[in-house]
Length: 472
Image (cartoon, rainbow, N blue to C red; front, side, top):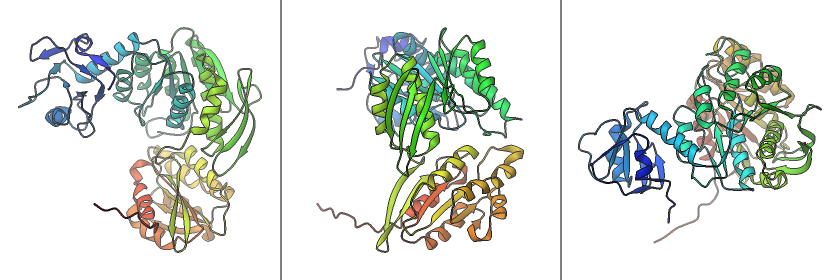
């Protein structure tokens, strides 16, 4: 039996008018903003975004939604109660505020140029070792994702984990004020979204907005290895926050003591606010290890068990499109596919290339397939061509590139490392599939708009693993 998330009486408290005008006596077990994925018993919220959610109210009700939050009565709507508000996004925000107020959950918020979602997932696992933990789904970190996550938080949650993102200055402040976290993590500040900022320093200032909603006496968990630490520390102190630094720096409160990097993960020894821990991660990369220090620092400042949390982190796996590895069987052997196609920026691109270097060649080649990194503004060409150093350091055998910005990298590559270049992922894909051979390891990465998943799917389609027969 599904637990009750909200009763009708609680929904009335967000200043919603009910239609039909009868005494409400239903309850909802979840909240959805997508009629395609709504589940029976959920409240459907008709947001106005790229498409007007009011167009899909009937579809949501047909799929089992027990009520809909709307700003007017859609045409021919029947079959479920309607909650009418002036603005559905503001109604969702009020519902999120009610969820925060009714719960005793300790809340932690995460932002940063790179690693937000992975850190959020790690916090969910780590805090989950000490109590019921609610966290953002996927990368729900924007103006509707944050209030939706809050509104979905069960009242009996012990911990709440919230990812907060931005593209422009001023976007994090209202989201942080909604969450009101007791602790806030900034994973790092890097040259991302430079299309909308004049400098990386401006990005740091935008990330520091997460302190706007920090509860009195809250903690700011900051990357002491990042060159913008001092600026972030100053902003956190202005918000009267306690400062906890993490990283490899000897003065870090959550400090990496030693690390054994491997192709499938890392073995780590760390000192977390006075507690020595040893643990393993199933996701490779020094950047993942560094962010795990922030995770355990967050666990510590919220009063949860650091030892249990460190042990639980061994269960952390890469999210889809963020480093998932698959063995693609063909021609009597296999190719290792590393899917990094969800998104890209200069920092995450360098990290993914470095991770590929950890794989033993096994007689095959290390191959990277890269698409454009978007939203870099006037520095786009420079930041793409500069990746040649990461390629050389990782001893990459072949580089395949697509997109107008990646042409700048292609032109700087030694001829011996050039695989091929094409204007788009669709044009590059056939050259990739034709060139792969047994033993190769291929990493595919680019911004979402570069459509690198198209190439991932084409490589997956090469799999000759026998399919299990099924019958009726």
